[in-house]
Image (cartoon, rainbow, N blue to C red; front, side):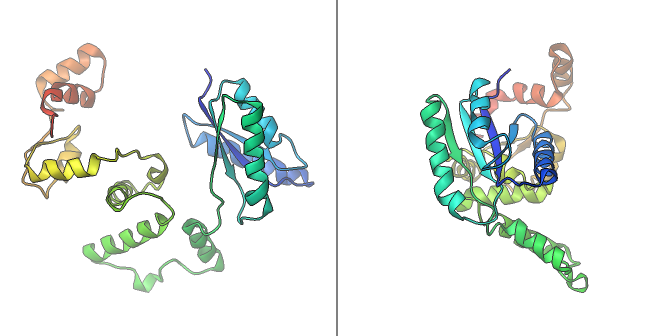
Length: 250
């Protein structure tokens, strides 16, 4: 089955065959870590496939969107001139395909952290690491906020994103998390109105402590367990189905 979006990671290209082979291996590893995404590699010159060849392959397989991610550190002429021209050529050759040009890696906070590590200094000197709970949380938020500097979203959305990343230690949520533009405002309103907080797991319910609202979870209810077995679904899904009638305004 075709994937509606294909991500093409683009490198410069090299006359050293081993270099291009290592790059394509990197692309394969990235694709393996992004289930549900089709990820391909391409080169600006010298090596194959070219960007146009990779885009043609994606279009032939039914892709509707091609997202181009430059594997470049700096915004030179390739990024400022060649990539926009390539995007135009792709849309001219394949009118049904839309092209999204990703940002270069320049000034990404993760690269700065990597350079600090390569220089040989820890991000925080070990003798100055925080030891108290509040100080540890503060330092964690500082690290997360630094890595979220390049994420373009409003302050409220970024606060939710920071909390999710803090709870999971997974920065990929900065790319994958989708929050409706009205979600945060409606959530705040619901909490102010003391509407119930509905959870799909007991661990989530245990973590919701700063609210005057009733916190509900039905995952251990006998009828939920029975429903999950009957319909071959998870207990969390069955629990949310049971409480679906309570969700309006919750």
